[in-house]
Image 1: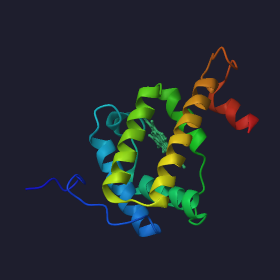
Image 2 (image 1 turned 120 degrees about the vertical axis):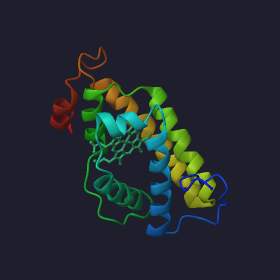
Image 3 (image 1 turned 90 degrees about the horizontal axis):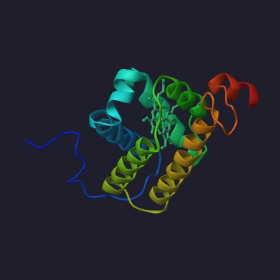
Image 4 (image 1 turned 30 degrees about the vertical axis):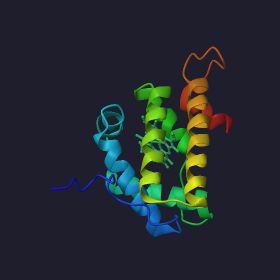
Amino acid sequence: MSNPISTENQQPTGDIHGGAEIRRLVDAFYAKVQLDPLLGPVFNDVAKVDWGEHLPKLYAFWESVLFGSGDYRGNPMLAHLHLDGKETLTWEMFERWLALFHETVDELFFGPVAHRIKLASANMGQVIHSRVQMMRKGSPLTGGGGEKEYARRS
Ligand code: HEM
């Protein structure tokens, strides 16, 4: 029987046009994340993510990034700073996240928007990782005080 989570044998059908494609992408990506030996435990055991809450947030996030629509209300920086306080987020984790994300995009979609979401995620990965490093408690770069300091400065 084929693995219901795998997108390996699917052919990309076209570009990302809106919410329906974003939901397919996000669902397929986080199914992989949960099974990944490096990322899965951070989501499931450290953050103890409630997937029923998390996935709709991510649909709204990517809709707002790509199309300026959706009702995303959140602060990704603060979410990752908070997480980094519990478990150090390494560049290796960001690389794995991005590799899985880009792989999933390519398995399902092709076109200018598919290209754009890969660029946007790569940029965000860089920004989130460098900010998290800077704001980490005791960082020699800023003497960062973690998420409280971030919330105060931004
Ligand atoms: C590389 C680019 C990444 C992007 C674009 C990204 C994006 C996001 C966004 C938009 C949220 C929702 C924030 C909110 O409104 O609550 C989120 C939450 C989260 N991210 Fe990331 N993320 C990235 C990398 C990572 C990595 C590398 C990890 C872990 C190894 C990670 C773990 C999490 C977890 C656990 C949450 C849920 C936090 C919570 O609700 O407690 N993310 N991410």
